[in-house]
Length: 171
Image 1 (cartoon, rainbow, N blue to C red):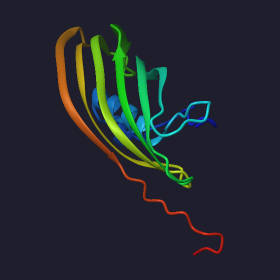
Image 2: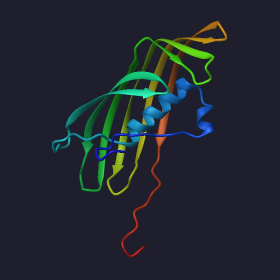
Image 3: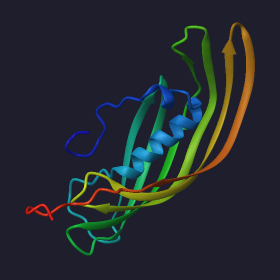
Image 4: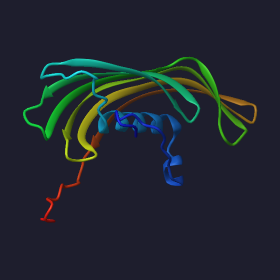
């Protein structure tokens, strides 16, 4: 993560790789959007709204993402509450999977939703909740066989930070 909270790189274990790619993409990107707030360069107050636009590349899938943040509460220097709306879309594309025998022809891909982030500024992570919808249309090509897939799924994600800041005396 860079000094502005943006991801530089990430990795997964084999168990995570067993999750269907479409679900994994939605979960990973939503969790990242909820666990880190990309703050604006200028100082803002309660009611401020800002948009962060970027392009994601996850497992070869290219998506454009908009995160719309609204500062709801910033009553002290240690606690901030931010609402977030997110929209991800993928253009038509063909992605070759690592097995060398399978490709995914994405015809349409869209994820959208809303959430709330409660950030403890003394901690590295935040607590958050979000709900959204994934809509994908794709053709899976494996061993020359084509299988159309249409996915329409609602999801909910909850991220709970369990860290606790310990005072200088260790208490």
